Length: 572
Image 1 (spheres, helix red, strand yellow):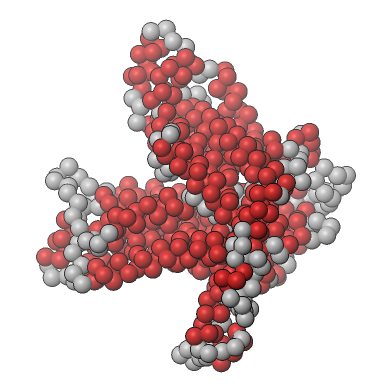
Image 2 (tube, one colour):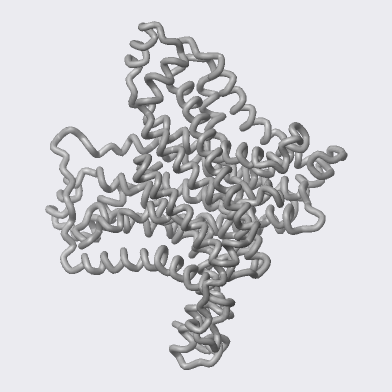
């Protein structure tokens, strides 16, 4: 089959954009000076990265943070999926909209909210506990021992707080990924166990859990990889406590240290990339094993629910508890703080501090307006170009017969292992050495977002493209249509729903993205997540709360427009 030169050139350009920056990232480890500046080759940074004992602690912290949050998120997701899809818990289907709710708010909302709730000096929960026990200040809470341990006042700043916030945030994503497994699993196997005298608990551990273990393992590997790549939680919760993982350590070396330590930060980025790549390989291995666990056949498959009896109310309590902790409490906290004149909860009546001044300040602030426009422009451009690039790459990978197609698939999957911030760092080295004219412009941010979200967009579009039988395109070519004409008149109209869905999802994720933007923005290209981080560092807590709610409001509007105007389903 003949492939249009336009498509081949586009594929080559995208491959260049993916591969070359990583080459410059490797080069940056050995360059003695700043990106684009005069210098010489040296092994100083990479030798120090692999011999500095502090980096062993950095590696262990990253693994503990990623593995701990992944384990808790998977445990929560398993219970959510089992209760919602397999039991008779009352009202369980209402909770199936949780994945959609999380898309409506910025990713750092939960992190900031938990600092307001569990700060050891002024956390709302700690203040409430102090008043409950009749104490006049939070330090007196330390007098309370629970089972011989001093755990009060609660302190969100540290490894435990990072794992807590991250696991609550990622549990919904884990549920979204494994929920379908429970919904399509043949219930006859569980029924056979119960008919043999097994209790509900024995059935879960001896039948259900082994059947879904490959899905849990692959999802766990993906959540672990997201933890390695996470920037928001380590920055908002880890940095104040001087708890470092790779992402916030790299950020500190490049954006906080004066002068910036680009060589040291780049060397750490390389080690982080190795860890992330290992997680990706394990993830790909586990997903290949999923096909060995096929339990749906053509023999009378009919899903049934498990009757829990009185336990269904305990299951309902678990659902309500998770929704309260992961969704209601963080959003309510940010909403409350956004209406306060200043952040203070000790010795004051909160109702006396309520005001609309924060929203007036945010809506009148020129930086906020400019960054909102930049965020919208960037997200829209990233959505359009990423979707177009993913459609072309998917078409070539699935439909074409060109040589090297497997290599193309491998190249397009490479960004899965790239944390957004690390690829942004790679683009800094590339731009300042190769195309300096786009450095500091929104175009560089668009390029970063295209690469970061390309693998996920390709996954969504490839699934739809595989379902199109080749005879439809063959009929068009038999009628005299060229390669491009066939694509625009046959293929694209058929996958139009998937294209819209992918565009909207990339738009939302781009609007929420902080890691890929934080190193690339300039005063003229500030985006909303970076403004919120800037205000956090400046101590403008109530202003950033209002900004976060405005940010979330814009995303809510985008989601509603996508669902009701473009009929986007919003699922990857």
